Length: 407
Image 1 (tube, rainbow, N blue to C red):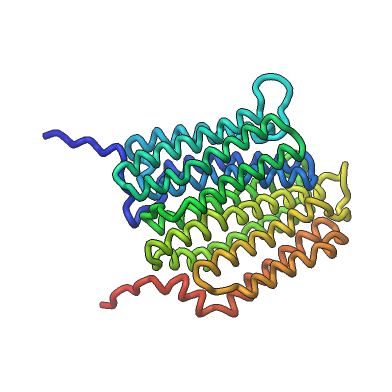
Image 2: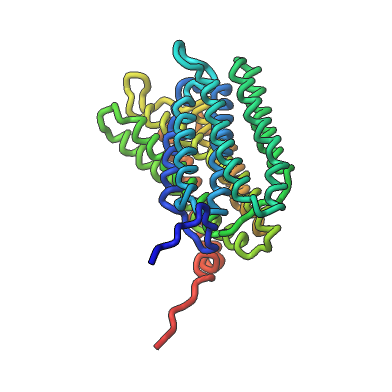
């Protein structure tokens, strides 16, 4: 008796979980986010922050494509393994060239060109695989055909940008992202979403990746310095900020959006998947990376006595990234939940406004004190929500669970 060969592409089951191969793919983005944080740390200027945001936009859209692809077919079966390993290799080259994405280093290959070509390979592999998947699905094929121009436009502008510099180069990067993001949205809603739970879990894990990078930034910031009480205090405060960001996402917000995604009809599911996950999760990741830079700088202020004293205030771009990143993260969470559930988080909107309003005060405080202030504000939000919305929180977290039958 012979065992039949597995189909080259296997449809994803409705109740699927994220595969280990998808987690392997995500490891590259851990490295990529670290590279972006390093890019920010080289020159803490507004222009460099914009560059970092643009790089994150490109990385995110490369990742999002495979989140959709892995929700249609199993990423760890048949030829999809080859596809995922190929995309991982291209993404790794992309991450390696992040320090040269805008300014080429002397000698060898052109960093901006390699970056653009790496992005093209990631998108080409993704698009080609989707066309194979849709060979017996006319609606999906039409959707992909309408989508092709945005892929070509985005990569073409990146290649043009690689031959320019300064603000002209940034303008072409913006054009590339606008063409890619807006083009994808305008191409239609004929996509496929087989497993809402898999899609939600996939995006939750990339948030974990981003938060993990913020923790890495805390450690890297003082790895070369002797341990001291200021470093211990600042590290614990930074770790608490990371934990509070985790809590604000995973406690109820992510679950509420996932429940709405699961309960929606097919057309509404595609809208929620696009708006709440593909689009709204980008500012969440950007916010976390911005916070990472701020945490890294605070740790430097706390431990590097050769350049700073413990009473020196954090100011300028690092302070704006620390506070502004937290506000952007919260606002993106508010939008995501509002679009999915039609419930507007007034408390979190107020919190984002308070965080931004506190920036002038934080600029007058020592760096550790400004971090402690942010920690206190975020902690107050979590504490208030846990107390004020206890019953609603329990319903979201445990309402879908079925009690064990009694004997």
